[in-house]
Image (cartoon, rainbow, N blue to C red; front, side, top):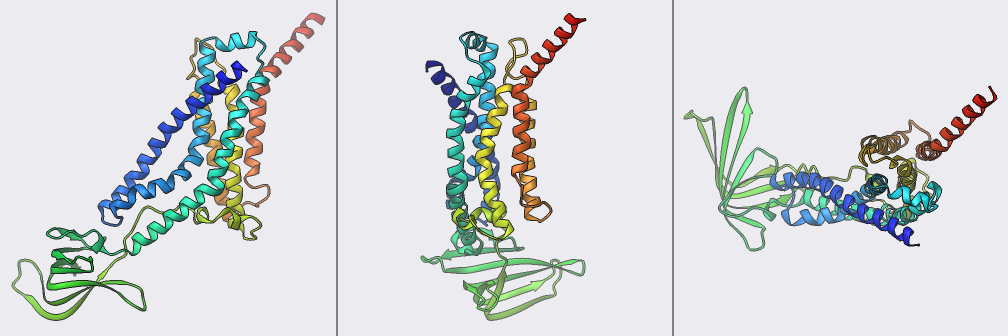
Length: 371
């Protein structure tokens, strides 16, 4: 019982440390993309951390299996290099017992990943998509600041407002400059208006910046040929924000209850994927036990690189096969389960490889004795 607690503590503490580092790396890369959208004015700054919080379960359901796999390699690798595994073996702890001990935290983490993939992650993905949909249709008035030049979305227009109304619906003392390329030259226009408001086209649902009581100056720089137009109302089209942040697979936002018993291929594939992630935890735990075996001369990092490559191949095949099934190129049955079966067989071969080697050696010795 003491050995059981000792081994589980080593695995779980290392899993927590490795998963935290991996999560920080992956979320930092994603946060940089969101930050780029915020810098371009397509995302409000106050929703960045909210989006990251909702996306956290989606990251964890993929990071936890990898973190657990690496944690077993590190924890057991240290025990091998410090000769603690030799002592445990002398005390009667066989490889089969070591696998049983390892599968206990593996089952716990598989349940956690199942909860994330089946319930928590889809809920977070739906909340994220709701926020992104609001950001795609939001007004530039939400981020514009008086007394500063600011681009209107991703268009080639630059706006300046002397003041912003208290309810953020009007821009006062407005200046808008834009450039258009015509016949190899750039033609600039400048609009000056008393105030401006945002309007939505009722039929096409396109956004416009309507300017009121102003003038438009249009011409080519360096030329005296300018057109001056006075207007009461002038509509400036505003392109919708091109937000890079999005949910990659639309099926990720569907509740699991809608996937169970669904007839269409995409929903059935999404259900297979969500059920595959807990199975992934169990299979990689079985693979990690023989891969962690080493000796003090080689160190505990000797098999780390090939082990991680093996994990990436496993996960990559699942992702590629999911896309092929959704595209109708591969049948739904056995679907993703074929990859799990292949790597389960590989794991069992690695577990029994040493026994098979000893059996072959004994057969050679018997043949030599008979000879």
